[in-house]
Image (cartoon, rainbow over all chains, first blue to last red):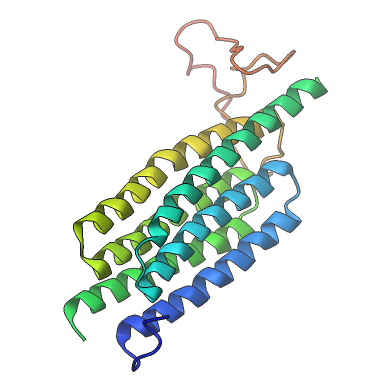
Length: 99
Length: 133
């Protein structure tokens, strides 16, 4: 944590506030993952959790001063998209089988 | 305290506000389609603002290109994922909000076997047979 070792600046306070807000957002979105009445609700909330993980990675890249973390953001965004498409195909296949 | 830190901090705060609004919308909206609306658009904008803050802070060409690649990837894949998921939810007969008034897809799918890609096309150009209460 390079940013948090020095004195408090505007950027470090903003980074801290952003980390707390994104953590609260992940908790709130996973509430919908647990509580969602149907499977597409859960998949939508999981997609949002993946997007929030990408934003956590970019905030951590700002806070630690390591831009290598953005490569992980690319891979994570790709995995989140592929999992969402696979879940959608699964939902369609399930509805087709139930006919 | 220079201008770059202020710009990056403001972008981070704006992105966190958008992300928080999208998470609250995912929990509070009554319908899977409205939840998709909240999750896709506001979430993409919030993540894009945070990636932009990273590119402003570092200020190098390679990092800016990398974060913009992530942002354009999100911008390309979010509508595709939302479309595929909404189509799957429509097939799976996920219940809509009870006050939804317009369903423009109502007569367009084969009711007998709702297989994907088996469109029951109405005569004419369509659009005049939309049941609008």
